[in-house]
Image (cartoon, rainbow, N blue to C red; front, top):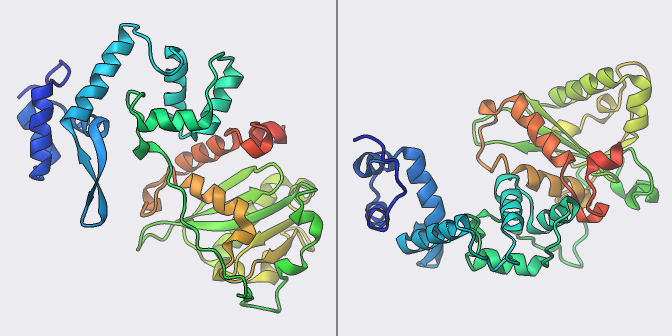
Length: 336
């Protein structure tokens, strides 16, 4: 059957809901309903909602919800007023920033102010609008989940896996206060089980500048070679001005301290400080950035299928992303 050119009708949405309930393959649904497979996926996204069953949350499709969103879209096209300040361009801008460009609601609002929109809403109102279905496509499912954190017990003392290495507890206080640029945090973002490639991530503590490098594996020698390439590319003087210290964890890929700090030219290229074991919050800036990277490369990603061009695009996005802590400036603006 040829792909239909019209919008999906309500009866067709009901049929889609029924077939999904019986777990009919999506490709088969597309053939039976006469739509492209991409249209089916778009429609499922439009009408999805969270359903609790046996104590577990599941994503399901609702024909009624999809139809309601579709009708709101048609209203927008005819210029009927919206709840969101009756400003259609403003609503479109926020939805694009959050849905397409992976901005948080707060960052999207800040970007809108910088664009000169006169409509002004608070973050809480935007969340309410998203939950209430005011936007055409944007739903709660598109928002990042807040990570669950297990606080360390007050009487629990952090443990250092290798006491002979420089500990974060001896790190100069100025680094902790972020009083000087050039101090970074480092970690790896790993892929799915059986996938060797990883991402090496470096985050500058003051500007939040991000460097992401795709590595073929997580061996210590591979990490060192990546830093060697970075040093050669920048040159001895520029590199030492930009990299004064790196704070990292006790992963085996970072533990060859003497080799890690050795410059490709001569002497020491930077200092390395090691966090306590099981104390990821001690390099929290990098941890937060890694969660941002997961917006693009979720857990379970096979990094062997991710290109260096894709990694570079995410790095550019992060360095152009406005931060509340930077007065809604981006790392790239501070580094300029």
